[in-house]
Length: 277
Image (tube, rainbow, N blue to C red; front, side, top):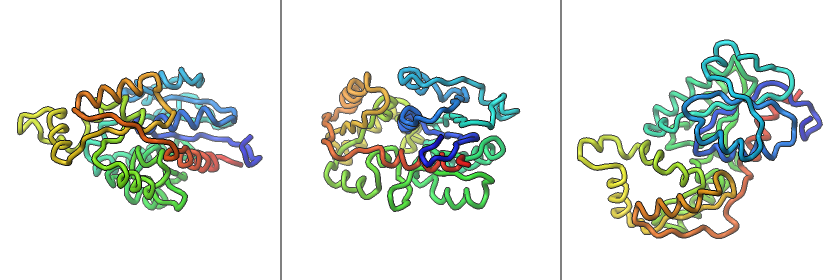
């Protein structure tokens, strides 16, 4: 029974970027409603599975291709959450990310009753996605927005709660690279998929060398640890220190009062409302 006293029944598809999977795990662990959780297995679930197990989240695994052939026996009665992890490599080109996410959401339409999209604007790649969804999808969808309904820019903006607060952070902490647990623990993968690095093979530089050059040119001297208290806390500090050392930056930590789960709470509540009857 949902918080509004109405039964939650149907299939909710969670389509998630690996850099926002911590918010997804948080939503699942703080939601007290009974639910079946199905993880569609693919090459993008490597970091998520240990987090689900560490958080004592019970789930079954179904190959991605089997689900889209015949739903693999996932029922429609009761509350069913289906997790579909996206490829971090989509960030290599924001425009292509937008095209691919739209294509994949169209695939979901006949297999779920609502979509929770764990993404921000991502370099404006998903700009206009809400309007597009209203016109092209047969089921409702939602993604991260602030109190005023504005789309969050990216995976740093989501825990901060709004673009306005994100801008405040950038004014107060300039010349810094921001590290949440998900970003810090995946920094090598993020480096490999950064759109800035397209064509590096033509100038004989590694992504690490080029990133250090960009930091020098932009006057970056620090990386800022943003503690969300989500994700891989066992390795968060270690990965922040590793990144700082590799990039020649000084590590500092953001003070209290900046971070909340408000955006994640709101998005998940809206997604569940699609399944209330």
